[in-house]
Image (cartoon, rainbow, N blue to C red; front, top):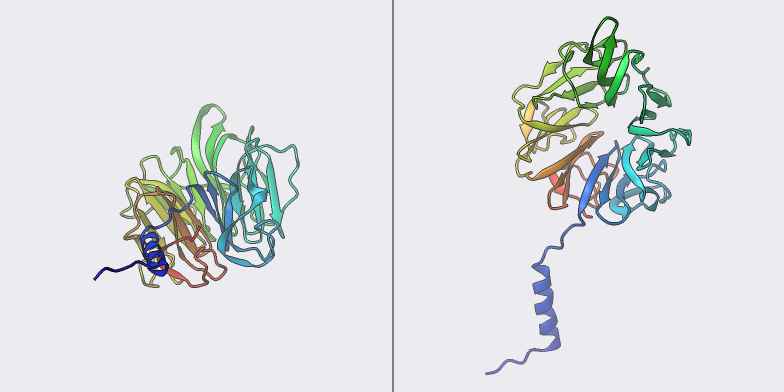
Length: 327
């Protein structure tokens, strides 16, 4: 007996075949994360963002929560982004800085920057030339930089601001240091730190030997993170920190009440815990009680708190393991 394929049968067959192919995510090249919203730059087209826009921190979109990513045309010329609680800032290729949202400061149009950092309602800019740190909005006082020769890294916490750079001493050679407020951090003098990240009450530094040292905002001495070797990037949320290792894996430590450590539990982790199943990571971003990783294939996976849709999967459910963003 010969079967005759009807149109419905052919359609079902084609649908089944098409369902076997997983659509590739758009190629992403950067990722940034704030306390309640996240953005990524695509290889082509304007950046896309998701999460809270209740204070206009995602531009001219409707002031609501966006649990799925959407393009933000205003960011088409952005080279770098810095995402705060109720505002965001962009650094353009020319060094110009633009900010928007409820806490957005008025940036002088002639200001040129090489780095900007946002924390809460505070915005600080490392100038393109010179060492005079420029900050806007309420927040902790910046360190004394009168003897600075070069500024390389900047991190802002809820009540502290830290810088890493090279400083001069009268009658002595220049020296490398990390300073928070008016005092240097013990254990980091003489080390050329290139990367600093800060949470609400802590700061971490990536050292040239690929180890990490951290300290609380009220401490003046840095301690090594036990068992962490081969780190190439660090990212901090409010109460947790993650490190990307040279082999493309990620380890996290700190508070875990919103699954910031992504190990399936809510128990705090005083030492780094590997995130199993997450490989090929190219970049990390942290903010609030969550984190995201950009993979080599253009995929982005996020974990942690999702009360404002900052995980980008179309839900408001917390992620206890890294889950893909629905780009």
